Image (cartoon, rainbow, N blue to C red; front, side):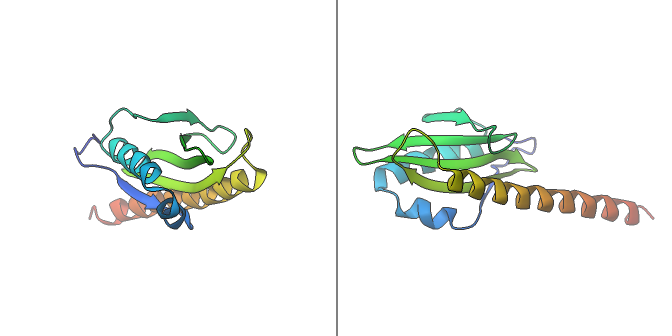
Length: 130
């Protein structure tokens, strides 16, 4: 759990929620269950790995069926939010440059928004102390 005891919010970037919704039901169930565990600060029950090639704090949830591999890239909890950066299917051992670039672009947008939120909260606390 977070410091406040609340579950983290999920923030889906770009088309990641739509892509996740298009995955087979058992894959959606696996990813959904594990996202809920992440929100509650609990241990994951699926295969995952860090993705430093995308950025610090980015991880990949992994699942597969007889047809293909499914991936969900997310940024760990920041200010009680878990950012789902990108969901995709792949059929080779390597993650495509396009999928990595999509996740990196969305990560940059998230970092810019986080910086803005922090700057706004600093301004608010300075002005609110009169």
